[in-house]
Length: 266
Image (cartoon, rainbow, N blue to C red; front, side, top):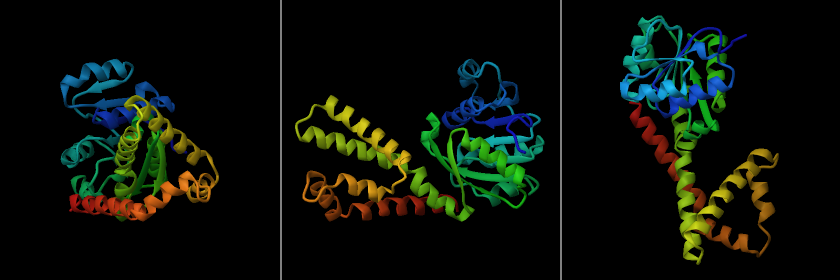
């Protein structure tokens, strides 16, 4: 059985995503002594050492076996190459656009590679991730990667060629929700509500609706139908959204983000 405590785990990149994963792993049972955080920016070390006081924080990756790469896409291949030279047997990359084949080339094809696409709610342990593995990955390697990603939310398995679609949907999706929040707040203000009231109502509207969606066995369509009485206020609002091609607009946004993800991966 795989375990995140089967050996030391190195996270390269102490930024938002790397730190979120470190916090999630520690909360999920990873022993602090088994965690190494590698951050090349020495100015960040004081904060990281305060937050992760019982773990090692260093500027350079040394001897390692299991590595999570959470750096900018432009740095991924260099980091993976260094990790391979330092003894890494498996690498989980959470960088957008850097394909498994490129990582395999940087590591001479000798390392188990997992590529994942998390999203920003991982920062509060509510992320949605998808992962794809290379041919070198054993069941144990895949289980290990899944445990890491589950520490910051949920995870699904996909083929690598679908990670661009994942990026377009859930990777970029939080920004769509935040844009909706902006529009709802403005709409409330336009109808006479104060900015403070419109802001509070909108935030709770999205939180409450999301929790209802997560906890209900019913589909989104069924939940929508329950709150949409014939000829009622909600029906009037829905009719306006349908008339303005709301579903097509969302579909076009996901399509555009997916296409851009494919372009970045070339």
